[in-house]
Image (cartoon, rainbow, N blue to C red; front, side, top):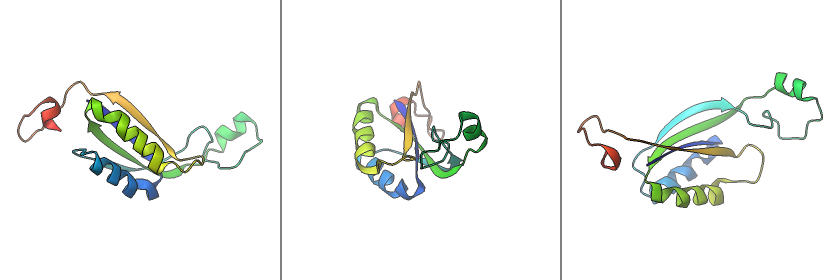
Length: 116
């Protein structure tokens, strides 16, 4: 199993939900977030020094969607996210993929993929 931590623009959330639903993802948690990446929240090319860029970091509204999927579904989901969510502009977001060693559905005690 893999955990996908997907950080995207808020207006792309509905498209992400369609992708995950199409790929039979069992669940989704969405968290409102603020953040920035290497561009420090700027969409233009800033000629200031790196020190000044760090001090003038702009936090941009994002959402972080977290889901756990079967290993065999990861590449398909990542490809669909890239095809359908990317605008080609700075700030589209990132997806972090991590291994999930185990899971448990609290209500039933089901473990592993049965808990998804």
